[in-house]
Image (cartoon, rainbow, N blue to C red; front, side, top):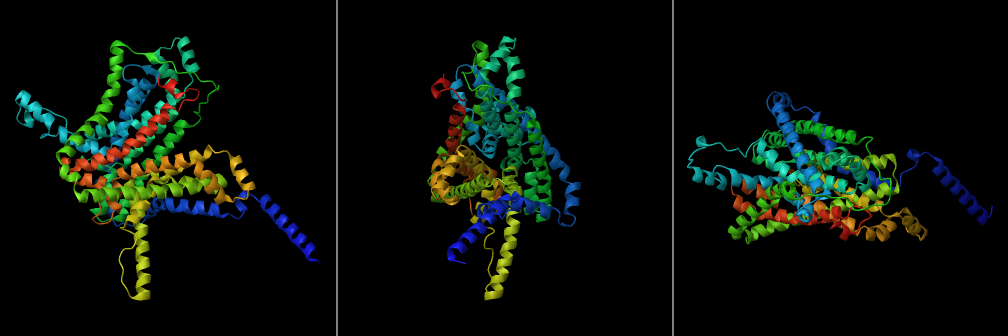
Length: 578
């Protein structure tokens, strides 16, 4: 047999194998490296959640019996009450202000369109510090009341207790309502003007048109917004700790560090995961078979109701009150306190802590964006059931409270450290301590797991806008999958990558429960520094750190407000401002 015939025979056999490979079912084909990398990275990101579930079924002695007979019922009642109160409050404020700023015309509407998002830049625990300092017995409000009416003790008058469940509900509502406002306003802006005008011709006034037409159409977005609020409520640590409200998050921290029971903390975390799963299930059930599509590609400016006189004043007040209480008052108090303690601002130790906090958050943001890009691109290349399922599981961290993830992060890392230390000691006789756990790497890994869904979702949305024909064109020019990503997608994704990095960076700056548990000994971020000072009743010293966190959160808020203002197709930006 000649060499030419042998080459043709081998080529034909290769083609037959290639055709046979393509004829195999997708799940029987040998996975390529992108699929393997996507599934592996996704499992690494989802590992802390599975570790918590594994630890929860372990034996913790009688700790679970003790918890269930003492503190568990109180944790359940308090957590449910907090979720219901915050959910109802954010629903009323978020939907009401979204409707007014989108569908009504009154004095100040253009300012409220973007300003109502500003409380999103302020962590809930910072607002808790501010209002405790203002409203407590020794604060200026009660002091002025005593001076004005001649009161001297608490027995002479009644004043609501800020450090209570009601205070926590109020503070968290003022900070979290922008989640509902954000999605509800976007839903209102995307609605068809024709549908609303048909409602008017059928006798639907402003109130009935809102209740019977606009609100049902926006219901899926509103449900998602409320679900995000409730998950943020479950994750909160600083507010409930400062107000001494016994929730699951505070209980996990207490059982783990004070009772020294990892299993008990994991069991409490598993119960909290049930809350999260129920929330996600209710959110999906609420959106099931409730999808609304536009039947026309033509869009006209939305008809706005002109509010004058007393109605305009009420609309202005309805938008101004949550903005003033949720952002203006806390920001002014922090500015005054920071100005009166400039020695803290110029202190080199404060600068080092701020740089450490910025550097750690930036590193975690870059890590999350890199991992999110790999997952999104792997899912684009090979959207097999396994890859899709793994990608979804990698996003579980965003729906899980930081205290729960901290349990899942520290336990496997500590086990890895012990194993590695034993190997090093047996080989060299040198005793080493902790290598990974208790380091900045562990904290950055926890941040990445917590906010990976945010980065992955932003990058995935950007990839969805790139037509697959560009991938095919790059392949015909000899580029592999990696070359297509590097030369085609990354340049086109600069905006999405920057947006994802900024959002993750800001969330890392504000994250408190995970930082409190995973940080190295003696390491301080701006969040832990503010919490430490405030816990010691030193709000003035906490103001510079808290104000720095607020300042970093304003940029993404501005980006979000501009994106919402331009979300309605068919209109120019100038038309939307009119």
